[in-house]
Image 1 (tube, rainbow, N blue to C red):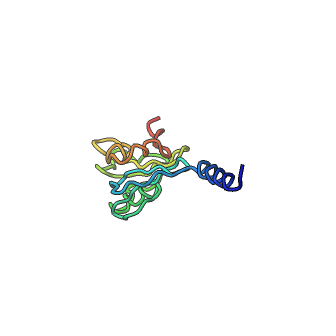
Image 2: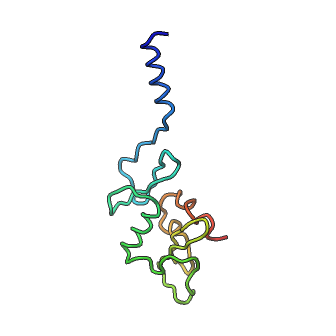
Image 3: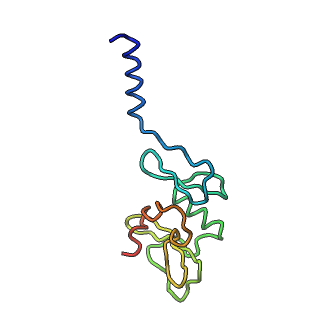
Amino acid sequence: MNRQTSAALLLIGCLTAVPVQAERPADPADGQAHELADGAFEVWDAPGDQWIDPLGFWLAFAQRRGGLTWGRADSYPPYGDVNEHDTLLVELDSGPCLMEFFHRRWRRANDVRRWAPEFNEFGGCPDVFN
């Protein structure tokens, strides 16, 4: 094998060993997810005009609406004190999940807002109803 062939094979080997990150969508919708090379995802925050991590997206969303109504807690507030569209970042052992009070019950904010489906598997969201 000559030197040129060896260099070409080395370059090809290096390029195939590096995980390729898919291109970000050209015109993403608010709450649209984009998978990263490490398996995590980032989310398009349209009002902020930036890609951010899911928790950052939830906090930015809540802040634009006046902040988290019930803050961050590991339990839900008394039912009689809660109003439609109140928010709570519930903290479970498996992680946080943004909840929104909608149609007389707590729901994952993603179930109300219909952002990216990846949110339902992020942090504590798979466990909020257990």
